[in-house]
Image 1: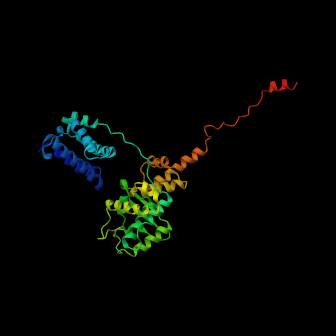
Image 2 (image 1 turned 90 degrees about the horizontal axis):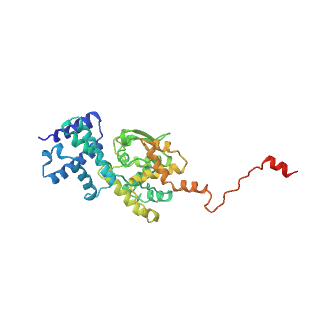
Length: 330
C-alpha cells in the first residue's frame, strides 16, 4: 500500500472526526474534493488511486487539478478556492506525519488562492417579495407548504439548510412565538416570529402529523425537503411571480435571495449591522457589510447631502481686521 492511502484515511478519522468533530457536510465536501483529485491524478499519471503516493501529488499536479476545475468542470473561482482550502488542510496535516515529503508539501501549500470578483447581493424589494410569497396556489397542500416556506425564509433569514432541517418541535407558539435552529458552525439561534408568521404556522400544523420530529417542510412522501428541491420550487414560483411583478424576471432568485431580502429589510428599517449579524448568525460582523454596499437607497441619501458639481459653495463670512476697520471710520 502507498503512503497516501493510510495518510488520507487518518486525516478523516483522526483530524476531522476525533479532533475537529467536523460536520457531515464538511466531511462530504472534503471527500468530494479528494475523489475529484484522485480521479484527475489517475488520468494524469496512469496510476490507480490506491497506488498513488504523496510524491505524485506535487504542485504541478495539484495546480493542474485546480485549473481543471475551472476549464473542464466549469467551476467558479470561489469553488476552486474552496477545493484548495480542503487540500491545504490535508497537506498541512501531512507535513507533520510525512517529513520526507516536506519539499513537495511546501510547494503545494505555496499555491495561492485565486482572486474572485465581488458581486452585489441580489435581494427582493417589498412588491417583489409579496409577489413571490403570493405565487403558490394555496388551494393545494403543496402550495400552502411552499407559501409558508417562502414567507418564513424572508421573515427569518434562515439559510436553506436551516429551513429544511426544521422540525415541529423547533417551533414554539404562544405569547412569545419563536423558533430554534442550529446553523452554520453549529451555532444555535433563537428567532422571534411575527404574528402573521405565527398564524400561518398554526394553520400548517393542523395539516401535519403531531409527532415532534415531523419535518416542518416535508416532501410528498414525508421526508424533509432537500436543498435542491427548495431551489427548484423557489425558481418555479419566481417565474410565476414575474407575471405579476415583471422586475423579478431580471433577477436570479435562489433560496439565498430570501436571506438577503430579510437582511435588506432590516437595513432599510434602520437596524444596525451588528444586530443584523446577530440575527443572521454571522460569525464575523464584516460579513454583514456586504448589505451596506448593496443598499442603493443609502447611497442616494448620502448623495443628497452633497452639493452638485456645478453648484458654488456658499460664501464664508470673514471678519474685517479691527485696525483697518478703525482707520476706515476715521
